[in-house]
Image (cartoon, rainbow, N blue to C red; front, side, top):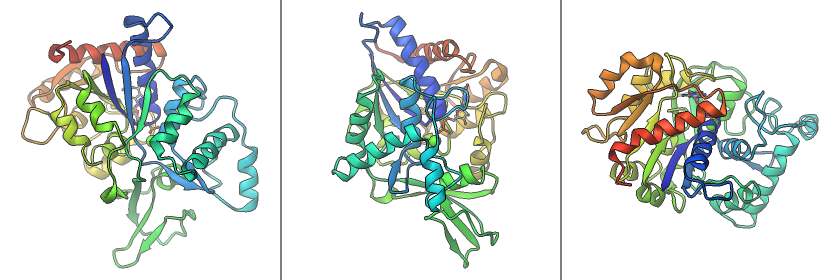
Length: 350
Ligand code: GDP
Ligand code: CA
């Protein structure tokens, strides 16, 4: 069985850990792994150059989580992390003091930057870096070209956080900054006027991405941020078209439960694109593959607390499964992954 998953960072990682566990239990290969082939198309819109290093937050969140090296309590980064190098960088006045690069994490960024400077593409570098971790899945960046998410806000005359990419346009009264500056430094508190994907015009999907969607037996859309994780993968040339034309059923999992983004600041992102923070609204935003609206979903998983929303989603031509969506333990994430595959089954030819 070939499964292709679209994912952002932390939400995607939690879902993937459950999926891997479910597949190890139901399709074991006899060596502790699974016979299923899982390919993950990962958002790289958060990526940035910082102190000369290429940082890929979502790729690394998934890698550390599936590699068993993530900090469960903090929710991101490496377990047992220290920050001595970051303190030195701050003393030198380089980098972003509020964007801590942990010492262990820096090992990944240095390795990646080294490989990129040797001429490897991001997908080649990712294959080299992930080889160490025995993830049980293949991580593909959505694109080998940088397609960085930037956020346009009203220019309030503030000095800004010193982001190298920050630009002020006095004509329109706006300020544009890298997504990570808006998200981490400002905690998404500056109302976003819009999101821009810098580099999209010259980007292509990374090798294997479109094929992985077209060749899959099932495509899963992880409960990731609909705007700045899934929403940044979709416009990469070829990806939305592949979702719409693949013979595989496309099943999405709502990242919204009871009108809340569970954890994190996704509300600020949805507000910016005018989509209510609701499980039905996000499903309808992704849209039905069978309708004329250019959507890509066959089925959508919503939480039991949102059961009343099912009929409105089904009226739009999207099958709905009402199941527990909380992934607070690996067991719950495993059950959720099983439910997502079960939702694909009516259309599965396997
Ligand atoms: P990021 O790149 O690290 O922000 O991570 P993602 O984009 O992959 O996922 C973030 C989103 O995951 C959040 O906005 C939440 O909506 C969603 N999320 C987090 N935990 C859960 C959970 O337990 N269940 C569900 N259904 N969604 C979750
Ligand atoms: Ca992210």
